[in-house]
Length: 142
Image (cartoon, rainbow, N blue to C red; front, side, top):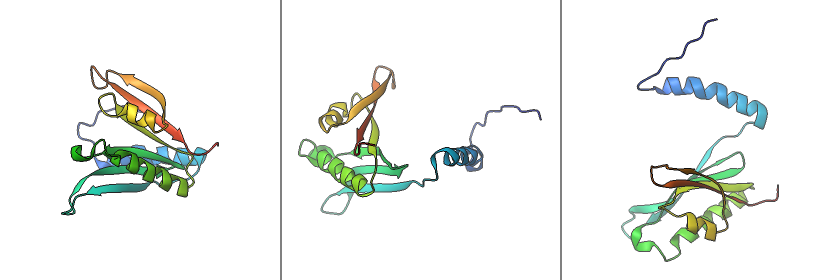
């Protein structure tokens, strides 16, 4: 069998799935089957408009916090800490091993350190002139 590599300028969902499905099957054979479960904690104003919040996914007994956005008028008032505490509580209810996330140097690395998250690593110059940090917080002693 002769194989070749080609670039897809505008990858389709079918092309993505052709890559994802065998990878998921392999991962399941090694780590067991796990389905992603999304979570959202929303910050709303008195008109019920969403101004920010937390969005993440439970997967393989970990919570990945993909997004955390606190509206400017609520910063410094404990809203971000409350969102993170609520997420930790939900992760504990689901018996998660821990929580992981990433952030940029111009966002909130010190905020996460203050909440007990430990740095796993960083990427320099992502974006150029800045750093991207990766953090985790273990919730169990596994």
